[in-house]
Each structure stands twice: as C-alpha cells, then as structure tokens.
Length: 290
Image 1 (cartoon, rainbow, N blue to C red):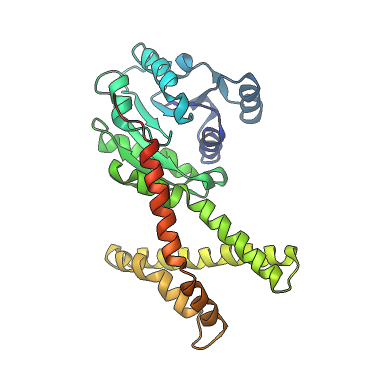
Image 2: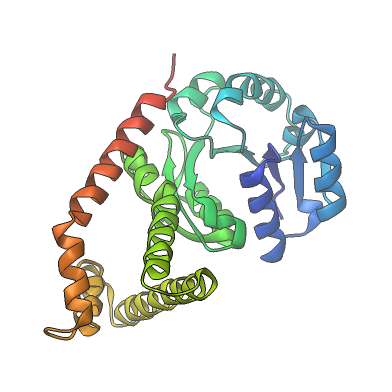
C-alpha cells in the first residue's frame, strides 16, 4: 500500500494518524515528520510509528500531508520541495496534500517541482474523535484518481466532500469554525438551564445528550433520503432541519414560545453575521502564490 507521510505532529496531524490506524492502515505505511523531540517521542511511543525528519519522511512517501501551522508552511515547503526533487518513489507520482489553513494550492505549485499535484483539505476539530468533516479542493495538476485516493485517506477521520478552492474560505467559516459556534450554543443553553433552576451538572447532561440525539435524528433522516435517491437528497438537505423542527414544535406549546424568543433575538441574523465575519477573516489570512 502507498506510504503516507504526515509533516507535522500537532493535533490535526495526530488526529489523521490515529484515524488512519483505526481504519486499518499499517504502521509500516505511515511516517511522521516532527521537529519537537518531546512530541516526536510521544508520537513514536503512542502509535509505534516512525518519526523522522522532513527529507526522510518525504523520500519514500507517495502522499505527503502538510499538517503544520500556516506560519511554518514556508520553511517546511522548502524542505519538502528539495526532498521531493530527489524522492525515491519508483513509478508513483507524489501527491501533496495541505491542511494548513489559508494556504492556496497555487502557493505549493509554485514552490514544489513543476507539475506537482496538490490537493488542499479543510478538516475540522471533530476529526480528533473520528467524527469530523473534511472539504477537499484539487489544484491544477491533481487528477480525479488522485482526488479519490486522498478522499479515502480523510474518510478515516469523518465525512469527506469536494468543493472548488474558491469556496474553502466559506467552508472554514461554516465547518472549521462551526464547532466553536456549537459549543457556544451548548454553553448558553446550560447557563439558561441553571438560571431556570437546574443544577449545572444536570443542565449540562441534558443539553449534551439533547444535542447528540438531535444530530442523530437529523443524520438518520438524511440517510433515509440518500437511500431513496440523489434527487430526493437535494430537497432533504434544504428542508429536513425545518421539518424536524416542526415535528417537535406543538402549536401554542412551550417549544413554540421558546423559538419565538430566539427569532426575536435575531438568532438567524447573528449566525449569518458570524459566518460572514469568519469567511472574511479567512480571506485576510490567506497565503497565495508569490
């Protein structure tokens, strides 16, 4: 099986490593490049994986995943480019995957050997527990087959979808930042429960279980729509949340009263503004080709 090099052993790099092992990838087919001695020791002891330098990791890898912070990309890509020029991968073409936020595929294409296939990925925090979602955007030279193979890599840590690279800032604003929006909603609902007379422990348990159960209901309904065919799926994606909301909202009941206050407080407008602000900030932080 093709070897995967993960450049950077931070939280996202570790999450991908852990997910790949859970999905059945062999340790011998994985290698990590990590400069921090303490971090390298931790990864080696925890996952029994080879942890080495960037040149050594790139040398025999078919897939090179850049999982470092945007500020570290420039120095790391220089190392990768030099190593890639002398890599011993046989007949397999190396594919470069970046999960560094805001760094365009054009940037990598300008730094790496000419014609190098680059695929940009935007995973989110829940990949740490195998429940994330990753959006992929292929660069100019990545083939459909290479995109399929990279999709299989990220499938180990959650759902995968493909979007044009121009949409990745919006993806960042929705799914990348989305977990924080969710946690804020949980925090607010717990606080409201305490104000209503519940203990914090009881309120927290009620809110977390309610959120998890509601997400399960939505996923089940969408899975049913998918089983019925792609034509129905498009409609389901647009209407299922509203349909489920209506299902649990009795006319004139307690839920209707609560929803009325959320609408009066401008929940929809606040969410839209949050996503737009996050998208704008993602655009501002972007690193493009020189």
